[in-house]
Image 1 (cartoon, helix red, strand yellow):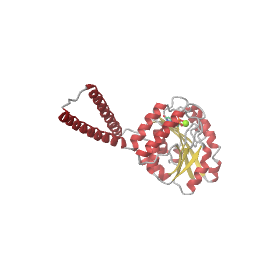
Image 2: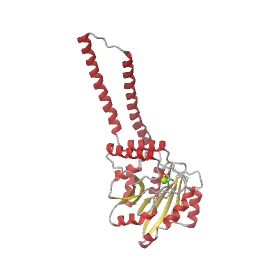
Image 3: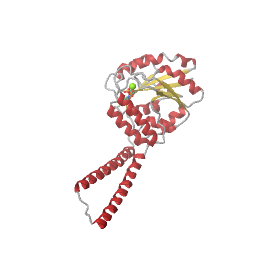
Image 4: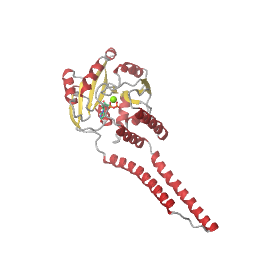
Length: 316
Ligand code: UDP
Ligand code: MG
C-alpha cells in the first residue's frame, strides 16, 4: 500500500474546508484501484474563523483527515513547509483549499508519476477572472525574473504539485527562512512534467492577496533567487563615476580654452539631487539583502504549531 498525502494550506477557509473534502473524495476511486491510501493534511495558518473546528469535525468523521494548526498566521509558504515536514506519504500533493486546484486532475498527474517523472506540476494558461492590471504585472514579473535569475520560474505556475518522496525531502532540505516556493521548486530540479489547465475561479471566500501584497511578494522572490539587483547597484556606481570624470575634463578644458567659468547652480542642484537619489536607491538595494541575511541568520523557526490532530496511529 502506498500513501498519498494531500496538503491543504488554509487561512480563513471555513466555507471551503468541507467542500474541498467532498470534491476530493469524488476523485479517489482511481487511487483505490491503484492501492493508494490517502491522508488529508489541513494546515491551518492561524485562521481567525471556524476553519479549525470545521477540520476537527471532519477528523471525527474520517480518521484520514489531519490538522496542524499554527500559533498565528505565518503565510502560505510556511504552511507548505509544515505540511511537507509532517506528511508521511510516499507521494505528496499541494492543493489550495479554495478548489482552484481541481482534484479531477489528480489521476492524470499520477499517471505521469507512474511513467517515471519525479514530480508533476501545473500551470494555468489563462488568467480569466483576474484584474487586468494584475495579470499584466504578473507577466512582467515572470519575464524579469527569468532574465535575472538562473532558477527557472514558470509563468502561471501554481503550487499544485504532485511529488515523490525524494522531491519532498529535497524541498525540506532547503530550510531557509525567506521561502519563495515557486523558486524553490525550480531550484531543486528533478524530472518535472508540466500540465496546463484553464484558470478556475475561487469557489467561496476571498483571495488573501491584494495587489500591494503581491508586489512585495514579487520583490521577495527576486531577492531570494537573484543577486542581479546588487550588480545593478555596482554598475550604476561605476557609470556615475565615469560620467563625473567626463564632466570634470569637459569643465577644465572649457575653462582653459574659452576662459568661461561654469555658470548656473540650478543644474548643479539637479545633478546633486539625482546622484544622491541613485545613491540612496543603491543603498536601499544593499539594505534589502542585508535585512534578508539578518532574518536568515536569526534562525527563527519557520512556523510554530499550537495544535496537531490525527496521524498518531501510524507513528507507533
Ligand atoms: N493561504 C495560507 N496562508 C496565507 C494566505 C493564504 O495558508 O497567509 C492559503 C489559502 O487558504 C489558500 C491558498 O493559500 O488555500 C491560496 O490562497 P488564495 O486563494 O488567497 O490565493 P490565490 O489563489 O488568490 O493566489
Ligand atoms: Mg485561490
